[in-house]
Length: 588
Image 1 (cartoon, rainbow, N blue to C red):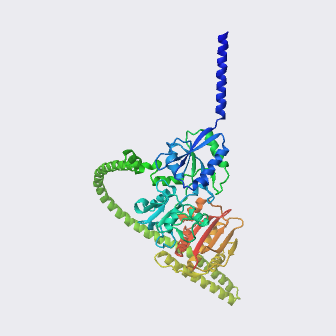
Image 2 (image 1 turned 30 degrees about the vertical axis):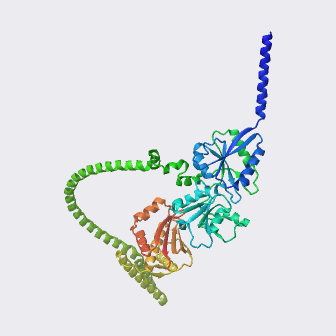
């Protein structure tokens, strides 16, 4: 019984001790260590880092926040510094930490920039009265004052910018390090100790605003400032300072720090912490300077060489194999082609004789075709004036047979017969020029309105159309054309339109003449049968008539006339039915 009591007493004592220990651990604050890059200027500590750490400690009383300064000149120092979080320049984060799995949880956004991703840059300055210092090319063999070399953010950005311009900063320029004293760089430039200086983004404007620098004493070299930007800069704009977390950082701690940073009010100097993203622009800088994941670009180990030139090596190997295969293939083909040539020479002699016979036959066919074409063309174009002469003659005979001839009417009819005779003569001259494509076209300035009205009058006199002709003819500047040829072309289209809609209940032709984009535009549309796109394309491409008795030359004639005038012809479906022909002749 005593042993049982002793065991129970011992068990209760152990439980009580464990409870006190757990209670003690719950009340004890947890510790989190933040690594801070030593590259920051002394002003950055009281302006940003100090107030930020103070706010975090007040907002997160259950965490003991410690800081540890890390020398970033040592490659991989931030990786091996045994810290939970880090605050570092963006280029250090991108080149050293990202590949180890670190993630950005916050980014510093200054008041001079709406976007923290475009809020840092390098600013190249010189004395305003040094007129010979105009661009980055004047840096060569000169001295430049910088705060620090190595991984200094602005220095790295300037190196990258100059590399893109073909200038190696540390090889071509004498670099003077002033340290982080103020106004070290400005003093070196103003005193003449250095020809150029390198400042951070908006640092020059801050110095002018505070009175530390007199206006007009300093100029920005190769200023890239845009209208919407507040400050001058030489390099491109890049992201700002980053707060990041390592993969092994407890999630609750990282989340608490992130939330506190986003809730933190803007600092007195109007800095604030915001969401971090947009580091892609730094990849080009890291690659150009061979930093972080691109460090292999400056190494000569076999692995590094393969990583750098694997594509070129594979392409070279493929080229060698392709060349070997090509040589083998060429030799094989030469042997085959030689044998084929022997056979081909014999066949060529036979074909040469056949070709001679074919050329002679083709020449005969071309001559016969030309004669047939011109004959059809003459018949096609002389039909209208000769028909008009016949009609006028018959009418005159009937009038004279009445026994009371009207001299004025007789003279009018004779004038019309004379005019139609001249038109027939003009047709013959036009056909002659059509038969001789090399002959120069009689291009003169003519009134497109008058030409169209004459073509309409000719159609009305022919008596071949009893429907309605609707006209919409506006004042149009004169165009350069062969007047007779253009009239024949328009009459051809009008006559075709009349024949196309002769079977419809209410045949009509709509004629428009207007100026359009430097052209005299003629539009003739009928309400004949509906056509498909294939019908229109076939008419234009094959130059054949859709009428059973058609000669198949109308569109060919029109197209030839329009081309000689420097114009263009277009056929379109008319809505809801019929065809619309559009001719455009250059004005002037």
